[in-house]
Picture 1 (cartoon, one colour):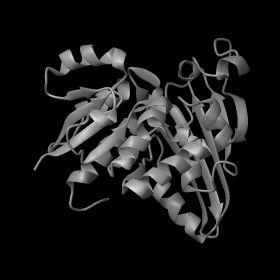
Picture 2 (spheres, helix red, strand yellow):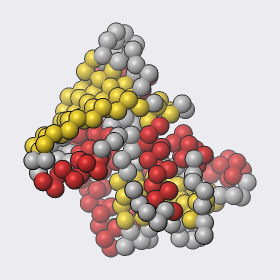
Picture 3 (tube, helix red, strand yellow):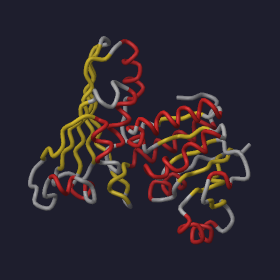
Length: 264
């Protein structure tokens, strides 16, 4: 039986996820701002229902994925969970807002829904969450991206992105600060914090490097289990340099998990 997917947002990431949807899952509903509805409805030609709000849905999705950024999660997350549906979240940086996180958790508890935090653009979150069970001493995260990936963010006020000639640190702080200041770039910081020591105790450094074309993520974790270090060099989406290809693929994996009898 075909599983039915609802997608919140249909930008560069949403389109990539749609292109790579595994066989057996159909994109039945897309939730987008009102100004995008008519054109998108024409593009889908009736194959997918285009909605302005979650409560316009005429069925029950097997999975809802958020590909809309922080505003999309803020607007539509609670209605999804209140309906008792599973919501897979990419924009984890929004969860640095303690009130939003608590509201989403409460909606899931009361409505019977499930809030699923996706790994997004980073690897090793299963190991980090496992290590937390034994006690963590230190979690640090460093992100290094090309200047174009920081365009349109507060980085432009912290460093001259056009003049930088070598890899340069322009932000140091905790994961909560990073996620709030760089919502389009620092979801990874929030994801690591949620799986590890929390927003206030996860230390973050952000760098710009004019010589790179990839997004580099470095994680160092120490605890009772021992120590591990991860470095990931990811390609950004072609149509959105602020978004990692791996983040889109993590959404595709969540879709596949709904279909498979063995969950990896």
